[in-house]
Length: 149
Image 1 (spheres, one colour):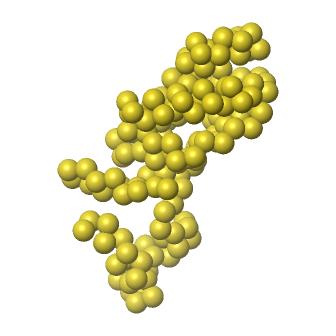
Image 2 (tube, rainbow, N blue to C red):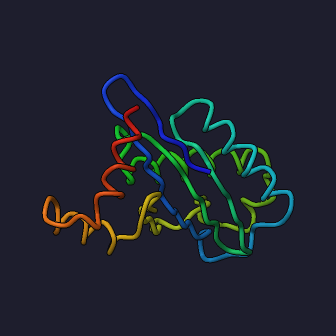
């Protein structure tokens, strides 16, 4: 579950849904690769301000639910996750490299989307549009102010 991250000058809750397909859409995610991937992600969490809330593997791709800080762009998060996991998977599970003849673990592309904690995009859009003009959004505004307490 995501939490508010308090820094010296800001408070944030930035959550992303990242999907990374294996190179050539190969079915490389077995139990061993899945477990090593999760171990690697724990190590990434220790070194970077990238926290894995959920990791779900399918046969040929992985879904990550990631929370990070504002200093990391979505592109940087994807780059760090993909590069470090690829390098370590090849070291820890060398038989995977034989299935992926080009030397890359992931495809060059990925999908990333922000995930809201307090409301949907439509809710926030209406809140911003009606800022200061409608009392029905006061509760949402009060909830947002509580994060700074």
